[in-house]
Every structure is written in structure tokens, then in C-alpha cells.
Length: 214
Image 1 (cartoon, one colour):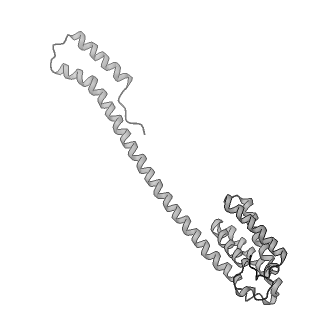
Image 2 (image 1 turned 90 degrees about the horizontal axis):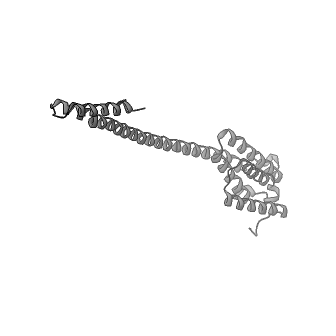
Image 3 (image 1 turned 45 degrees about the vertical axis):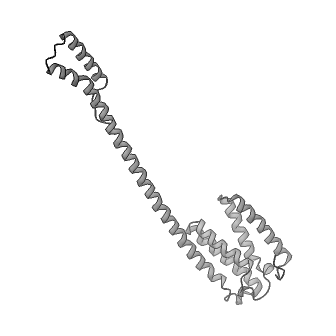
């Protein structure tokens, strides 16, 4: 969109395609591997197309669209992918950028191209950010797990207490009452006491006292 740009028509076509792809990526935010491959292919295409995008000899002395695209890509790939994958990806971008720069300056004059060195700095910075984010996420996961474990332990403790209360209530409502009656030398007929004791034994046999399950 820069009217002062010396970008050639094929270069403008490449940037237009990249703009369309970027819009699609922003709208879908897909993380599938084939989409990442297309992202990388576009970045490499921008690198090797430097002669079409920035044909002037002093392109490396100022910010350009190609430098912004490649630098952002290195950071994005380094944060999104693990180091074993992002290192060769960054090296590939740097190699492609050197190839494109050589198409403008020649291989004997690419040493002053600062972007080639910034790629390494950008990878280191982004990789450290990725490590920090993963560690923070792991700490959050551990805290959440500990909270869930504490909540489950509390629920188990409550359940055991309720279970034991039910068992004690059963004993209180059956054998304890009958024994109390007998202990106070109740005047109830023996047949009635025997019937009540028989009912107690039947209830206790159906629900015997046992420790709360683990």
C-alpha cells in the first residue's frame, strides 16, 4: 500500500495473497498442522522474494514489510512450537532471508543485513517467553489440582462422618433402646420384648456395622 515502495508487480501479488491468508487466519485462528505449514511457506516465499519486494540496495537499513513479516513469524513460531521444531524453522527463515538478500546485494555483501542476526535474538526471547508461560501454566494446574484434591478430601470426610452417624443412629434406634428397656427392668411382657429384640436383630443383620468404604 506504500506508494513510494519499489515493489515489483509479482511482489505485490505475493503480498496480496499473504494479506488474504492472514485475514483467513485471524478469522479462523486454526492451530492445525497443515495451516502452520502454509504459514511457513508464505514466510519463506517472502524471504526468497526480497528482490521483488525490496529491490533497492539499502533495504536492510530501514524497516520493510518483508522484515516485519519475517520477524513476527519467527516470534510466532517460537512461541507456538517447541524448540526442537522452532529452531530449524527459524534457521530455515534465516537461510531463505539470506538467499533473498543475496539476490539484491550479492552473497559478498549480506553481512550488514541486521535482520539475519535479529532472528536469533527473536528466537531466544520468544523461546524464553514460551518456557515462562508453560511454567506458569504448570503452576496454575498444580494449584488447581491441589484445590480439587482438598475439596474431594473434605467431601470424603463428610461422607464418612455421615455414614458413621447413620450406623450409630441405627444401633441407637434398635439394640440400644431394647437394652435400655431391659436394663430398667421394664414391666413389658417378655413376648413383646422378645418381638422387639427379634426386630432389632433382623435390622442389624440387614445392615451390619462396618467401617466406611474407602
